[in-house]
Image 1: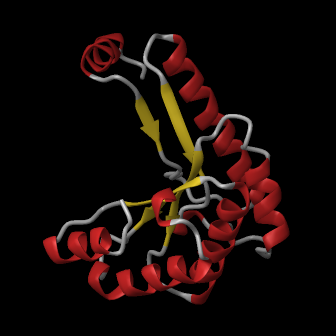
Image 2: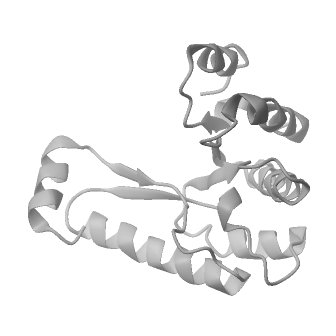
Length: 170
């Protein structure tokens, strides 16, 4: 936070902050994503150094899937493994449009999280949420990840909230 007054307000009213991975400028390559993760890490460290603990989740948001190079489990694993020293989990991952590439990247990140026993923050889209949510839940279920390790965000309807809660997710 650049403005000290805003930071002071946050420090007085919050116990900690958690930031999830989303890059405003769409990364073209895995190197772009890694550079973004470094900026995110520096932000969290600076926030913590000023007196408010800041934790972060790292991962490939569906709107941040690199387009200038092929995606593979090996590349995703290498990217996420480079973040394990301080990230508290994987997120914000999920689906935006529900296309095949998004589904594959989502499943690969869930696989990584399951293998490393990491918490997962899952994104649901702004548009077509009710149409895309079943695909998200199907992929999560197929991953076999422990339900207690999953937080699903952007839930804006009571039926969807109850579906998530009744399935054992947060």
